[in-house]
Length: 363
Image (cartoon, rainbow, N blue to C red; front, side):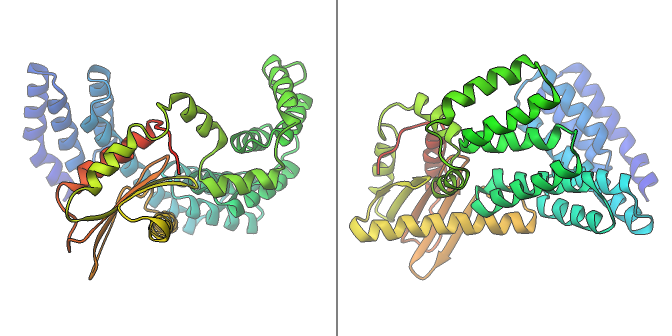
């Protein structure tokens, strides 16, 4: 059947190639890549997308299609490795399949596989892969328990791989991202024992020594990140970009809240929220509800291996709720209409994008 499909696709591929030679537009690159994808030639489709992006850098459709082709390749490879692993479990297959799961964002599955490998005597590599999977979950969700577990598992990986820099490098990334500078200094000192005289490490040791005096404890840093949902380094970057407290966001929220069918508009970043529409305790309840919907949706998507949550839409007797999570915050609107109004999605998307571009917030 596949042979017949490829045979029938031959003329379409030739036509797509001719059109691309005549006019090397982004649309023609997409058309050729789509023809390859139609007959499951995902690697060839990805190559066409890569070539197209070399000519039309950052074209959204080519970028999206290339990402999709890579994901399909990984799915095919994961399926083949899983079948082979069931028939003949061995270290190389465990390692490669865990790496594939990590690359395609199936973090829970990568963690489960590394635990299975550990039970079969996987040793240091299995410890390392397990800690990488949990660290990736922490970077995605900022849950304190995930951060603690990742650090505990890194302890096991370091003990099992005593001369390996990888667990120490990952630990350094984690503690630096949460601003635990005393732990960062200690980790750099351990790396310097493995690479004495490294000028980059020595410079980092001096920097972290200067920062360590006023640094929070590890547990306090984890708790603060969980509370605000943002790593300190991201806060710093946004503060440099800020245009003043809510100068751009507040008018956008007010304009949207002025629409007759909109009951409430909320923008949240970490523990800070802007609410237009309701006030007082009602506004606080709205902010808490939006935060909970976003957190639960992200957790459910992670558990199901669906990746990042792009949009949540709820409908009920009291109207509809649209929630748009972004990297740095959450934008949401409650409408009295039974279904989300057409104008709401693009307008709320603009609010979400404004927040992620570093606009300042005030509570």
